[in-house]
Length: 60
Image (cartoon, rainbow, N blue to C red; front, side, top):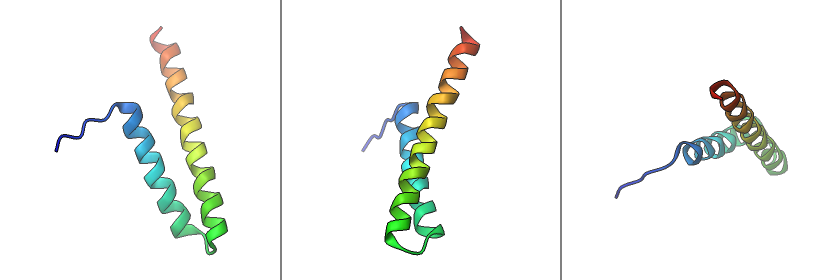
């Protein structure tokens, strides 16, 4: 099996898995876990686009 991900896809996969772990490890109730996991995933995606935008400006 050959798994080939683009940099964007790998970054989203990392964000998803990390957000899931953060939610499960840091919160006590299922509702808090879901909310925190979604919030963390959103922050990761925002950071991903923000950093990509800065890199695009830097490279012209």
